[in-house]
Amino acid sequence: AAQAVHPADKAAVRNRRELQLRQMRRDIAKLLEAGQEATARIRVEHIIREENMMAAQEILELFCELVAVRLPVIEAQKECPIDLKEAISSTCFAAPRCSDLPQLMQVQVMFVTK
Image (cartoon, rainbow, N blue to C red; front, side, top):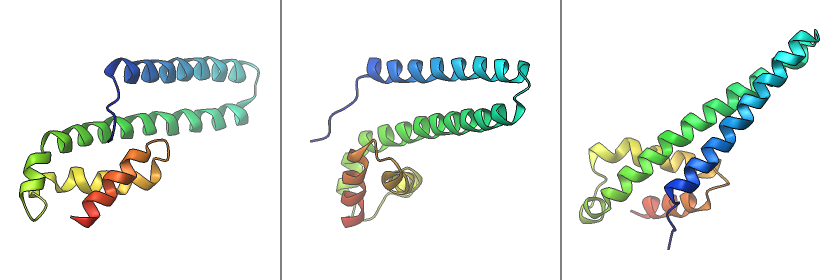
């Protein structure tokens, strides 16, 4: 059985990531002041990737919540409900790319068999 993540835990992880990003921005400012532009650009790219990953995880979290709420409908119908296709297909697409969330692979397998 999959365990739900407590909202306080999610907030703590999000806050920790945001603190890391703030520190990275300060480090970039210091690099620029020191004339190390090439290194600063690499760090900026990392920040952009991290911000994009955080946004993607928030969307994935919303899709998972939607699917969880609509599970009775999904189970009752033979075909995937049209209004859930985006959430389900996005979750299945993300599953192999989110190694830190092995539960998504379990969900993907369940949807593939359905």
